Length: 471
Image 1: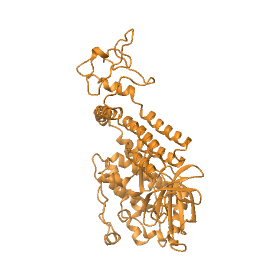
Image 2 (image 1 turned 180 degrees about the vertical axis):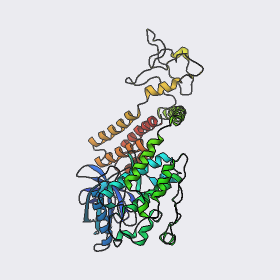
Image 3 (image 1 turned 90 degrees about the vertical axis):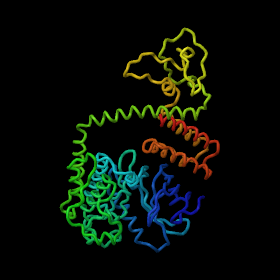
Image 4 (image 1 turned 30 degrees about the vertical axis):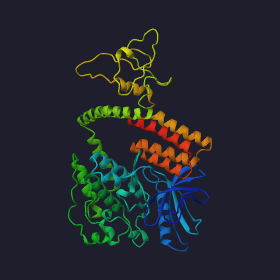
């Protein structure tokens, strides 16, 4: 069992004889979010846990209970989904309040913004999705009150709004414990005066977020409560500027940032305006599509070279690339002779000899000598790689099949196998980077969940996924 984690809980412990805690994935001032395995329903989940001494910190438990209730009332594909809530005594004699949620894999929007402003269309699309979530929440009487870049997760299926931890119901006064929380740059001016919870404050925060995505920084410089209280936000808000930004999107952002709540659009109006701007922006994109096509052509050449380098690393410099598996498709461009000739082993750096390889079944084929001034010949080794390396889908399926075999033979726990499958799928879809998967395999081996032999098998198969991903 691992050393104690924040909050006194340890990886490997089980809450309520059901939720196996695997690893902490995020922490805040009051709680820790764990990646966990639901042993009853056999699925991975996220468990947000607040634990403390029995009889202490009732306010914190009340907040997490409110979060669970508010989120459970909101059913939307781009909002976090709540499965369960409960309170229990931990093995360490502490009282824990926990909420079980759908586990989402992705990247915080705040991380993306640190790399620089987003293209206006990408920023508008994210803001439109969030506006739709907020509109659904407002229809159900919920005000989020903490719409920030940290609380937006970019996943393979789009942006998701997280953390309803300080949500309130429309019309609630400012005397609840959650009213003192929030992120200063996103807090609407009226919240500083103690006004009741109002959907307009969410629209203001959305305007801040849209401005931040477009420019790389929030519209106002204050970062602490003291600074924000000393600033009178009067007059027009700063104008958002970005390359190619339509005037209507800039005007919409300014309206969302209006100091007066009644001058801001509704969340649903904001979503509709952004959708209209995006639809208009799709017209006249022929030049952009052509530019992307030219860039893609260059990327194919770079990817081919990278795949060649990685293939020689996996197979070794002396591998006969012409001897593909029996099930691999073959490519023959020249005439097929009546009788097969011996195969020729080709070193990766050797130049193919047309006389030795002409029409030799699975040997390196001779490309047709059909050339024009504007039609460059495809390098022969590109065809060899295509015919002898599994596709990305095949490589991922073989990795998952290896996990299934390990489960059947007792070489890996079902929760660990499920975790690796999900992390691989998210890495392939979202980041196109397998570093997280490699780290997971190393961690599970270090804690004794994987044998040396099984770890090596997984890493070998993962390398083939990397080759297919690069190519």
